[in-house]
Amino acid sequence: MVGACGNPLEIIITAGNVNDVSIAPELIAAVDLGETEAVSADKGYDSDKLRAQIMEEGSKANIPYKRDREEKNKDMDWYLYKIRHLVENAFARLKH
Image (cartoon, rainbow, N blue to C red; front, side, top):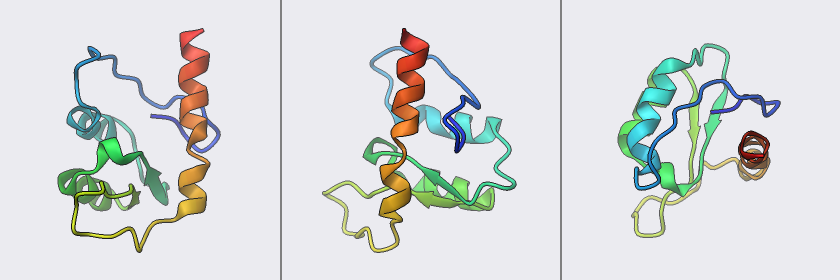
């Protein structure tokens, strides 16, 4: 998990065959979201349980629904979602 400036806030290393959404609740619990307005993540984190956890922490879940879900992405902040490339940049820095 990275902050708004792309700096790592919490890191959990798992095997390559572990689904992103299965470890996400642990990440959310480890970080204080007190002043965080929104948590952006890709479709791999599409989960009602995760959305509820983020909302309980006082933030908005900015996660697109997977294509096979009946819900639509009407509440998505697409601008905010597009700048989540900071996450990918942080991972690239950590790998190299």
